Each structure stands twice: as C-alpha cells, then as structure tokens.
Amino acid sequence: MNKGVYLALLSIGLAQGLKIPIHYLKKKEWRPELFFGTGGMPSSHSAGVSTLTTFIALRRGLSTVDFALSLIYGLIVMYDAQGVRRQTGELTLKVNSLNELIEKIHKEESMEFKEKSPKKLKEMLGHEPEEVLGGAVLGILVGLIGHHFTEKDRKLSKFKLKF
Image (tube, rainbow, N blue to C red; front, side):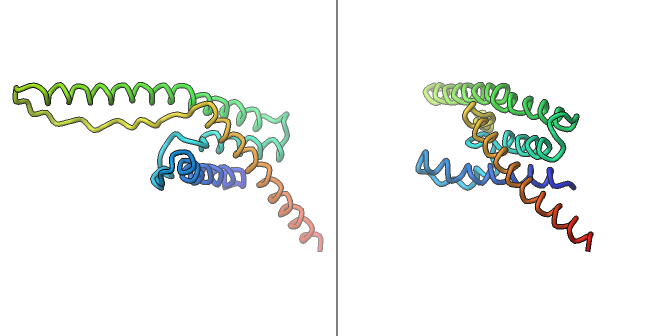
C-alpha cells in the first residue's frame, strides 16, 4: 500500500476517535460506541478523501490526473455525506417516531393484538454541512503533516543511497 492510503486511513480513524470527546463536550455524555458509528463531528468521509486529495496534490501536483480524480470523487463523497445520507437520516427519524405513535395507539386499545415490534432504524446516518467541513479541515491538516514527514523520509533515503 502507498503512503497516501495509510494517511487517509489514519485520518478516518482520527476523525472517528475525535467524535467521542466532541460529543462529550457538546452533550456531557460519554459514548465510546460513536467510534464505530456514522454521522457526527467530524465527518470521517470528508477527512479521508481530503487527506488523500491533499497528499496527491502535494506529491504529484495539481495538474495531474491523479489529483483530478481524487478531487472529483472526494467532492462527490462529501456531497453525498451531507446530502443524500443526511436526508435518509431525517426520514429515518420520522419513521421511528411514527412507529412510537403506532405503539401508543395499540396500548390504548382494548383489542388484543400481538405484533413483533420492528427494530428501530439507525437515525444518525449523514452529516450536517459543518461536520463535513470539519472533516475536510482535519483531512487537509493530516495530508499536509503526512506529506511533510513522508518527504523527509524520501530525502533521507535518497541521501543514504548516495553514500
């Protein structure tokens, strides 16, 4: 695997890990399971694609096909994270609240009716625009720092080969 992939994966993991303390600061609620969840601040989708795009821009240049592909696919991923997936999450909230309303109606009726209650749908699927932006900023920083350290390694290895 190349260093761009490693950095993007590191950025995704870092974004997922940051969701726990950020959620705690906002809600005063410790939820380590957020590491494995979707949605929340910062967006790991945005962080991953921004890291890779930044790394490619610095390593290969802005005029390369590599950068163009990474940029366009990254923008699509970020748009999807805050657009389509966010709307799906909002629809899920409505479906879940409808299910709760149906359960209340069933409890108030005297008619005996046994129904296996459906599993509650996951509500936190997409991102708000600021969560996508937060992930993008994190990703750019990881890409810049990662490129800096990998360039040092490349220069050192070239220096060692000369001797």
